[in-house]
Length: 163
Image 1: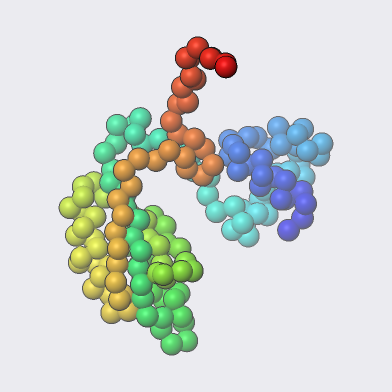
Image 2: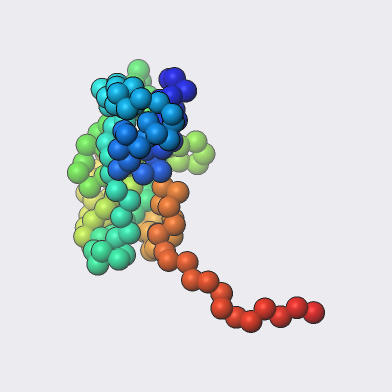
């Protein structure tokens, strides 16, 4: 990856809505060069998608999000990939990571209710032959996501007391 593309990614990571003309100005480059670099990264799947970071607590959406630790037995010849692929194809699954440590996969899912999440774990995830165990953690509140603080910060208005 070129230094220019890396700088473009850093800028888009901060705000994906920035126009190529603004990025060109920020980097001291021509707009056409920026557009071409972005197009190449989109074609190469370096840039996969542009998505907003949403504070669902303020959107009055009562989704339930859970992180599930999954221990699995890897398949001969394909390792963890085949099982991860089988899991990420479920529409409820938002992310799947291969992890080091005491479990193999971390799966993030969303459901409308706790019951819906529990049903996914008991009827779909834990019934896969290679799955040895699962441990489900429900997310109660998100404070920061993708480097963005979601809650409004309130300043401390108490009077400063010095000794």
